[in-house]
Structure formats: C-alpha cells, structure tokens
Image 1 (cartoon, helix red, strand yellow):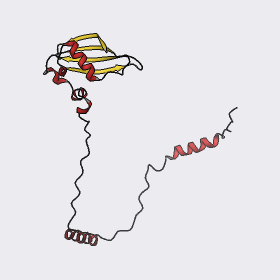
Image 2 (cartoon, one colour; image 1 turned 180 degrees about the vertical axis):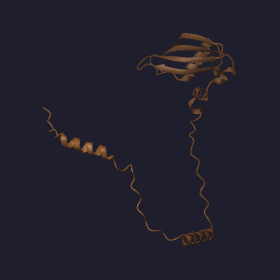
Image 3 (tube, one colour; image 1 turned 45 degrees about the vertical axis):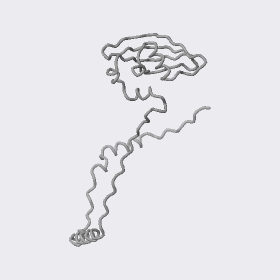
Image 4 (cartoon, helix red, strand yellow; image 1 turned 60 degrees about the vertical axis):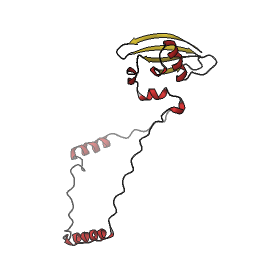
Length: 173
C-alpha cells in the first residue's frame, strides 16, 4: 500500500498541518482510519495521537482513496478535535457506543388513602346538594357566521339558473 501527498497546508491559527493524501490500495479494500493514521504519522514524523483522519473517500470500484488528515503540533492544540472524531480513531473494540437518551420514567401519582377517598366522596356529595336546580333551557341565539350574506346567495343561485349545464364530452381515443 502506497500513498502520495496531493496538498499540504499549515494552519498556524489552529496549530496544525492539513494534508490531502491519495492512498493506493490495489487488490485490497479501502484502508481503515487506523492504517491511514499510521501511514500519515510515519510520513510527517508526528506521534500517532496527534494525527486525525477527517475523511476517507473511494470511488466505486476504484483502487485509490482520497484522505483528509490533520496533524497537530502539540497535544494541547489537539484538544479542539471533536469527541466523535477522537472516537473514530480508536479500534472498533475500544470505541464508545452512541448513548441514546431514554425518557425518564414518570413517578407514579401517589394513591390516596382509603380514608381520604371517603372524605373526597362526601365533599362531592355536599357540592351536588348545594347546587340549585337547573333553570329552563334557553335556545342560544343563532350565530351570525353560520348564515351567509343574503346578497351573495341570491346572486349565486341566479347565476346557476342563467347558465345551462355543459354536457361532458368524451375524450377521443
């Protein structure tokens, strides 16, 4: 497996070198991040813990992968790397699984004691007795929105009568 450096750029503000590599992997599958990381650390003479592979892309059926690599100057400047990228750099058996937030179980409503239930029932009965008898039911006034304006209805009905219904024509086959 061989590789070549297409581009290299020094980012002084973030304290890193950014490189674009092409890894040739004829007869084998796309290299994993650990392999690319080791190749880059050997080439750039940097410790493996400061090299991060940002992406690996291979065209379908191709035998070369384009990789984006970041090489940090010191461990302190490497702290800006997101946790998910650091997790990707670990071997599969050491990776931290994605933590799914489970909804917290709601605490059950406290059940009232039997004595409390009886007291509540007595209070409800007293409230019902205290209510006066319902008065005669009155019909509510008709809503203004329910009836359309008289002028529009007459015009609409008159318009329908004036125009005869068109006969539907069959499409030609």
